[in-house]
Length: 123
Image 1 (tube, rainbow, N blue to C red):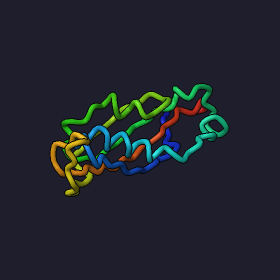
Image 2: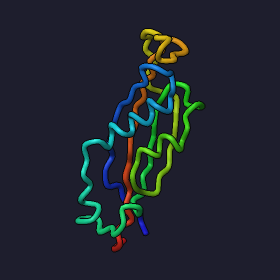
Image 3: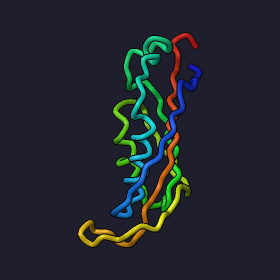
Image 4: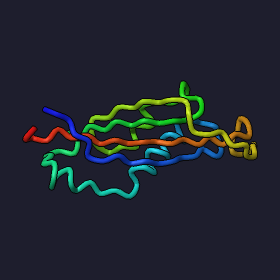
């Protein structure tokens, strides 16, 4: 079967307190998929099961080596999922608040692109 791109969704996420790049990355993915209803997966592509979608996530985030892949992909409710993480996003100087367990005053911003692929039955 030949895979075909169905949609690419983009999003941005921030961890203002906690300095966790996984939180920023997961929020970016959640933002990317938050306002979509992929009815065409069934009506156009003919998939029977939403877990047949192939979902490739690409995230740019500060401190990419600290990203927990499972935590980020857990945001996606369906599909055969994969994640590529690269250095990117932004570090913005905020305010460290001790009661929020901040390690420093960094706010981490991440960007994500979520590509949904399908393998149409007639390909």
